[in-house]
Length: 498
View 1 (cartoon, rainbow, N blue to C red):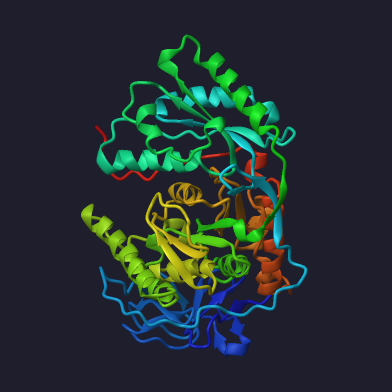
View 2 (view 1 turned 30 degrees about the vertical axis):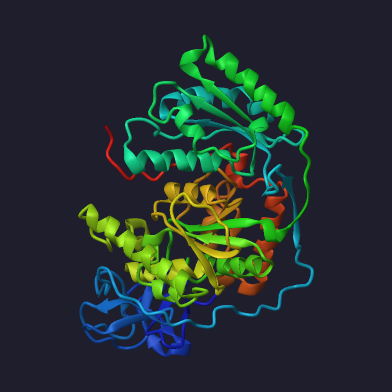
């Protein structure tokens, strides 16, 4: 394994791939390391004057707080963000799509379920969706009653409680966001049947929810108001049994990859994320969109500092303007709450080698690959345009993966350098940025992207391996969090609580 990597020819820093001690010579760069530097962190490969840009990925990731010598450890102690508030942007389209020479043997279909409305699903689960958090424990008890089939029984892939804390004491757009996301989840094609579970007195009651459930397959939905029955557990069991009888007749069939939608997310990133896991997911995104499928990139705050790269790949000026609104709209959201726009990266990110938000964002957007941006979605909207979509949503892992599922993602690719047992309403593939994490947390990690630097495999070769793995997951292979029985959902809270 090499000791370092210079990502772009114009960079004035290199990323250290394994811990190096002071006095170590980076031979090809003819630079001697002046301090001990941890893996994932940066080393200056030329002198950088105070106020001069620090360049990584071929772009500035901040400016030097003080003079930095070649060989110095480059991090938060000597680099600061160069980002400011809302900006004015110009549309300068660039050639976006790289022509890959894909293996002819790559599969162009997956084994999925065809729903009544024509959409494809990759799981055939019964989902218990509370309209309000007050009935979460009832939903969980019902899930436990059917756990014996959660590992797969016939064509049923499980019975899952999609609990959350909202649905009451909300007002205006905040309440409507809750109803909209719950309805998006209820109509998701991975759901073979849904029990809408209500307390009865909440703001987001069933009458209110039904306004958002237009288009749902009425044969596959049941409603239960707990306050209106003597024994809600017995009634819930009966209704779930009805749904199981219906969904149990479904069978997997071959479906074109063009009907697959995959969400792209990172969390607990480190200094390896932008050179292994995120570019790997970018390769995947380019492959699936070239086959006519869709990918969705979210976590808007982690586009700050790299947004122009995405804007320049917009398919036209309309999409460019929507991207500008997406970025500046999220900055307005921060300002509205008197928060610092660039209060990022997290302590774990910094420990892993990420210095500024620009550093984090330029690594983050690697997940988008090189494809054209075809559309921009508001929170709660669903994918309509094939190709790469941008989605309004925060960086928070739980909120973002729920937003991706609600937007129509069948699967989520989640890259991480620190590790997480995170789950979502849909299968969530955990991709480690470094091989040490993959070895240490075998119960969390599904795919090791660290092999890009720890072995001789190329990024393109590993991208095809990841693609084949995702097709297998789409066909029913369970990811680690599914095997552990983990599912979770978190809605974006945007208003006051009564």
